[in-house]
Image (tube, rainbow, N blue to C red; front, side, top):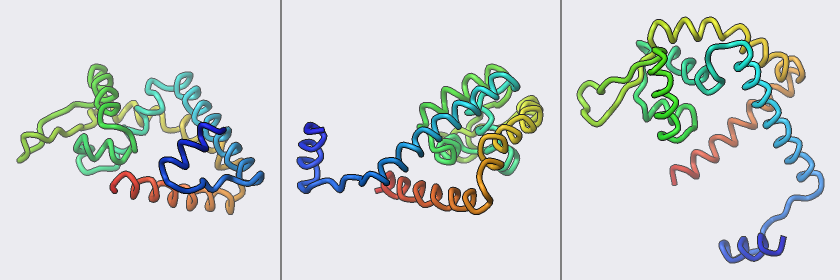
Length: 167
């Protein structure tokens, strides 16, 4: 803890605001629940789907966009992943015929990603198991009030992180 204390104090010039015992317990519960939730969803996708959880989320974003197409940079931003990571995922999916990349009309530097009919079929096939897993591990475990509060809380966290990234 002393090296954290020294580096934190040196970086900010002030004492860190440590978590109290209740905050620490809630923070650790959040970390534990998040990791276990994502692992459970990923495992479900591996066992029941032809697409991984990351690929599924990418296909969902494309399915919700006009012409099932998004600029690669917008896709990365929407997925809150690095452009490099999205580029690698798209390359694997493109090799399997789920998406295709093309130059952006009117912008030679821009690249679009479009879902193919095969990608749409994979999304439709994966959706029932995905939704069932989300319900089993989260929606049906929480009360409606807890689920609403979780959504509101994570939206606030995402906004703060995005604002920090943009600064």
